[in-house]
Length: 404
Image 1 (cartoon, rainbow, N blue to C red):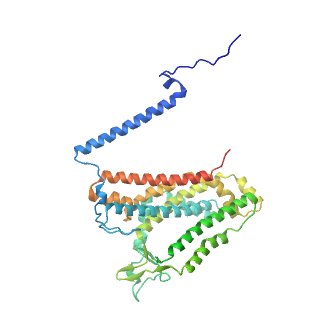
Image 2: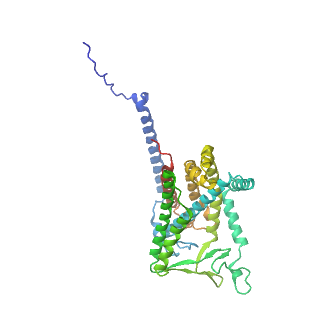
Image 3: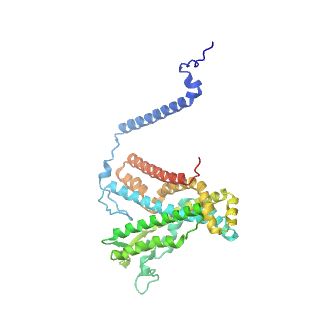
């Protein structure tokens, strides 16, 4: 009688790390990791040795010393006696500000231009094609200079708003466009203003929640709820009611010409405007091509089927085409957002005090700590890029097709 037993277990041999396919990939990856770590360790030791021979040492004590320079536009209080760390923090906030504004504006402009590139109107379609081809084929640096030059040369100076001989006037006595920037009313926060601000933030979330609910209801049951007027009502009505209930706690400080310049209000400097607009129109041209490619990736049968159901072209685009096109648009859109953040380092060209101009420019030149400043710059751009990628990838996973 024959007895069936398990085959004998093969003993492990070192040659199996290369010859056996079960271990080969892990072996090569381990070798690559060891070589990478060894290379980094060699470069680090070589850097430390050269610094010791040159009598230098890596230290970040300079961050606590007074900066000694002024910054023309800040989001927080700052003077030239503050530390280099605070000056760097001001630069970080300025970088985040222009990057956020440019991402929003470039997205709106890119979606608008990308949709119109597929318009049935020949003139509109060609105009959008001209915009895309011109702006994406000329370097961003040139567009920054062009927009900054237009602002500083064609806009009137503050003196043009003076007295009876004024050649320019403020818009509604509240907004002034000058060659130094745009002056607008600034909010004055009084007691209870934080309640109004909180209600406003909740209204924004409520508006998006309603729109999401209405869309889900449409997809699940086919019932179509109005979108426009409920969204506007949710956005404005609670905030207006809270404003009057709390006794109008938020006021406005209007800019006024005093001496040789405007005083009061909020100044949006010409460097910020030039960098913001240049980043927006330049990156918007690339986003427009991403949007056009995403829309064309959706089968025409989807559009024809939606039209056969009686949907208008606008609703077909919003409810059928764009939701499916997002799966193609979002991955390259992440790269465009990263490019906006990194391209904002060109701000030093027009005197906008971003992190590259403060920490990587003035602070580095004054302290001589080039290695430390460059390392901090690299760390900042790495962290902000990883954060953008993380947020956008979460959104990308939420919009992709859910497979079984």
